[in-house]
Image (cartoon, rainbow, N blue to C red; front, side):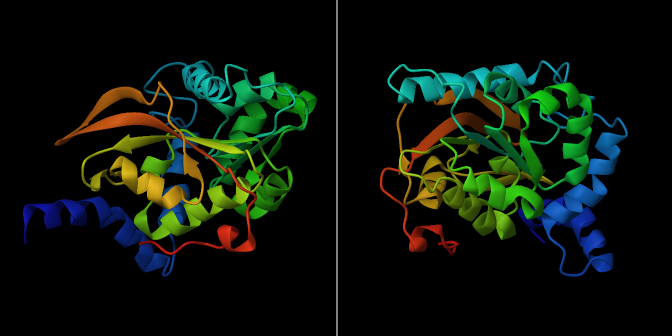
Length: 264
């Protein structure tokens, strides 16, 4: 057995044990059932729950919020995101980032989607007054995806999400982005981890070359901006580049555009 095979097996060990009791289950279902309860109960995590290893959970998302806004403003000819824009967040979790968008936007103009109902409910409890005022559309993909698509968002963003998508669920992830960005002119802004080759660096961590993401996002067009690079991240034994990639629907979408795309 090679060193790489051993690492892969170790990464999958808990998932494989879970599958014995949940045959046919997905990695996202495993994460929601195995890890999320620990996070809700106060277990420390880098980006989920209230006990963040990276700082106060209600303020730590402002930096990511500002990063997305800066990229949008640059791509929009220097015009900032208006309050009447419609925005959808993929992987909204406990609204660490989404709450800042909700506060900025007009009532009813934000939708947030996540795999975990528990994380969403925790966020709804924490921001109950804001949500009562702003009437955001929140739910799991099964509950709220159709409503989010119907809102025809101007901006769809995913921060610290693409790096946690299991290869078996990539097709679904990118298909959802395509469907949400069905309106001509809509933009997708996503934070990703970039490496010269596709690598797995932990149980729920993947990084790919930049062109890999660009290929998955077609027919949306990759749009250049000056704020792509965020920082280098050390995930032993790899050094990964945290980047913000942006895409735009430049032509009216067709039915074929919205069908799930097979991985190449």
